[in-house]
Length: 125
Image (cartoon, rainbow, N blue to C red; front, side, top):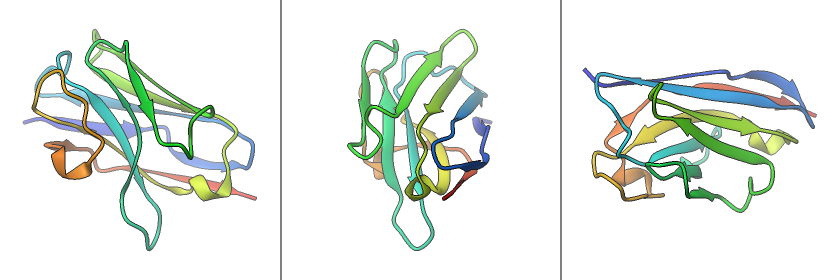
């Protein structure tokens, strides 16, 4: 059974930092892109960041570019999201996701085949 388990969420003041982790089990994702999405209350799920299979290419939403960094450790089957300079508008449930298609990076949530249950990030002003 494939599982993606996020951790690292919590409450932080504006300007602070958090590091999210997503540990995969049940299969290896070393040939698959990994993606972070988020969903704020009353809003649609949106793309945050993605990383290709090797970690050599990364992609970010304009709203987080320069503040968030996605990385991965294929030996640990884990992807990370370092979030700095957090803003109240970053408050959301953050989800880790992956596609079963190898080597291709998608930013559309409908293209994801595997999802974690999410971790809540709350940024207070």
